[in-house]
Length: 174
Image (tube, rainbow, N blue to C red; front, top):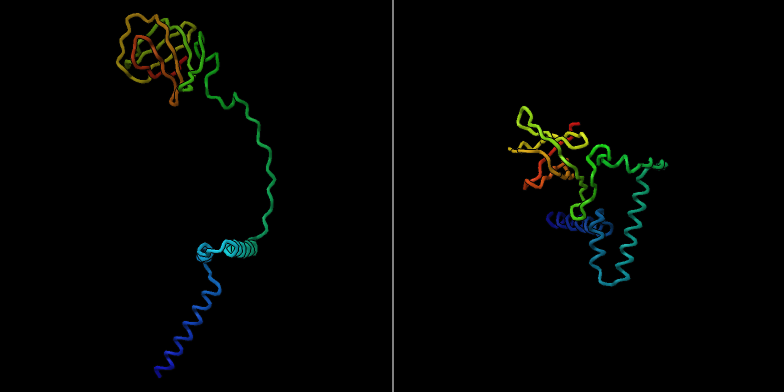
């Protein structure tokens, strides 16, 4: 009886191992086997046959797809893309672009400053524009008659005054 059980186990083992070597179900294992080959022509033939078989299996599994015709994209003008203020929005005695930081800057003259109720400052340019301080710094101005430069950055606008070391973060009011 032990011999018959042993014979059955040997036969079953042979059947399972031979079917596993004859056709591996995992494509990764098949590709690994192809990569282990040393002969270049045999390796290329192995990769080609595995690739063709995988493509046939994929095409049999897929349903026919309907092609979708792409519509031409709407033309976008630079004015629609640009979030930069127009020349009417900013004091414009000098406009330029900094080459190093690639930020736009505007120069103008501030005629007066007013301190708001909550300690924030309002800067009034000579052309009537009003810009409000957003950074909430403790600032002291005796006379507000100076040149200033407004630069743009990722978060908005900064006002640079020669008398101050750090720029002031500002927002357009009027």
